[in-house]
Image 1 (tube, rainbow, N blue to C red):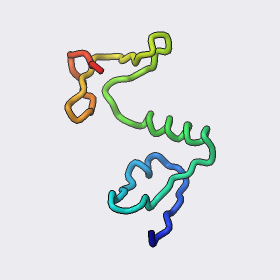
Image 2: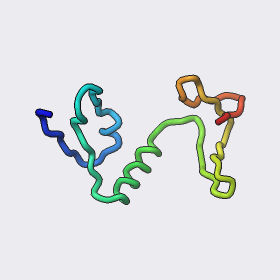
Image 3: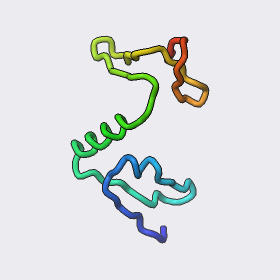
Length: 87
C-alpha cells in the first residue's frame, strides 16, 4: 500500500456519495465523535430520504409496520403498490 487513507468526520450524506475502488484499499474512513453522534447523524440522514411510505418497528411482534402496502422490485427498491410487501 503506497498511499495512506484519509480520515473525515462522519457525515452520512458525504459517505453515501463516496466512491470506493474495488481493486485498492479503502481510501477514506469516516470517524464519528461518539456513538450517539453517529446515531443522531444517521437518524437525520434517514429522515431526509424520500419514500412513499413510513415504516415503524413493532417490538411486540418483532416485525415492521407499514402505513400502506408496498412491493419490492427485483433490484430491492420498494415501490408503492396495491399488493402487500413480502419478506
